[in-house]
Image (cartoon, rainbow, N blue to C red; front, side, top):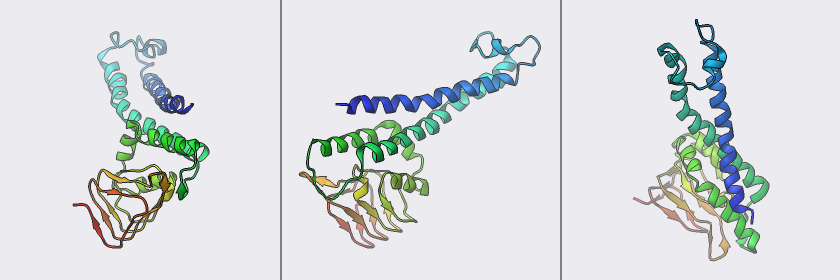
Length: 215
């Protein structure tokens, strides 16, 4: 089975742009101090922290470390998410209403579930709560989400079977389950409905217009 190696590969590849960006940032910051007296590019770009002067630390070391969390959060998370989208459309494919027919159907659900339960994915999606960016992310995964939706991160696997109409409000920790007992069915949340914290929506459910689900 190539599922576990694939998940490890996605996690590893998402680290690559961060490493490249960190090294490039260090070189860019270093280039600004090579003209100082007694300083050469090899000395600054060698990661010799102990030999740095106070001025070099202020101009190179401190800005470098301040940028690391931002690169790790946005660049790594964004790369991971884009890899998940590519796997969704080129390996997993589109989910359809009906019976889960064979091992391949079960495997592709398992694979997407593993990828979307990853901490890197969760942290990246959490950055965009209550923004249109989060809705766009779910659209890229196959969900049909209209405009003006108060989005929060929700748990789901078969995004193609999820429809969210406009003016819907989501709470936190919502779970949308499309498959139960080997049968996949669509979920629709109609306009102006509220699906609030810790709600679980089961397969085939239509949350009526203007209704309140949860507390």
